[in-house]
Amino acid sequence: MPDPTALAAVVERRADPATVAWAHEGQGNLAALPDPQLAIAAAAALGNTRALQSVTAPKELRKAAAAALHKLKSKGVKVEDAPAPRAFNLGKADEALPSRAFLSLPDMEGDMELLMTTSDEGGNCALGIILGAGRAKETRHAHLGRGELRDIWRQATSRGDLVEIPYITGLHYAERFMAGGDHKHDWTHFLEHVPAALLQTARALDPLANVPPAVDEGEDPNPRWLAPLGVLDNAALNHGIEAMSAVVNAAEDDASRDAGLEALYTETATNALDAGDRNALARAADLTAVALTFHGRPRGAALVRAQGEAALAGAPGSAIEGVAMGVRLLLVSQAQQRIQDRVQQIIAEQTAAKE
Image (cartoon, rainbow, N blue to C red):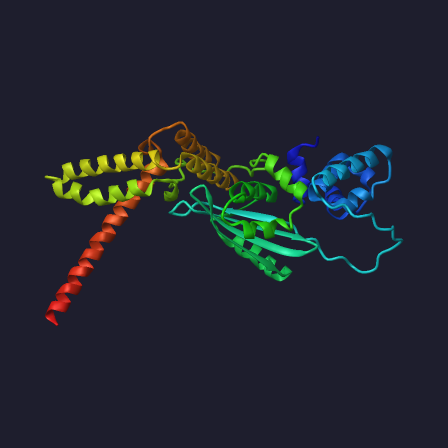
């Protein structure tokens, strides 16, 4: 069984060029490759039946290719008859475009963006997924020309919040968040360009394979992650917002007001997570940790992953920084918005009275 990391490198065109050329295009001499068995496994993961059918010698490689073809057939991959050999080929084949994936860091609401592109003989397809609350919130797919696809790549690489991740890692998380969700249409269309064997490999792959070297995170690696509010109980959050006015009005001085608000933040964070979805919070923390890892920030990733683990262990929301900070910011912002709305209402009433 080839090493999954080495297999992923061939699939993503990051390995030995000769091995990549044989696995993807069936070009070159299989027997002369550094690891012919790895090339056969990669061709199978890509669903490249033509390359596997072309293996006629030596005997051990022919048997390995035949076994790979048999496994593909058993998984429902259509294997057509091998074409007759050609003595020569006229014309220049189009440049093969790689499949790529990009993952963003979370925004202020805890949402993340996963952008994936894939190319095959049928064309180029892009899939954009907004991930929040441990699930896919929004998706969109598009079929693109080669120039449009390269424009998408240029835009993605120019954004500081996006980082390129191995395509098979992106496929691993897309399948995890999309399978059985509410966006089956876009996912189904995208999968039409993904070999079934490659999807199976992505499911079993260690998503943190091939991480980049860490960067200097400085003295404070804390990413100040905010948990997606969608994983928390909305009724508990609304109760906390409504209670803020009563806490402020009942306070006798600044000290008692601040103490009352701190107690309210703690109570709301705890209640909101207790009635919320801890599993979804853990999934969101895991994906954020992956994004931070590929951004070269392993210490920040460890801090976020620990928060997801604490949620699964039953820790109160007030003890999980991402939850506590998110709840505090929500309550404060909503209170400020209500004050502004009330001021605007008073001004409008006074203006109407003068008229």
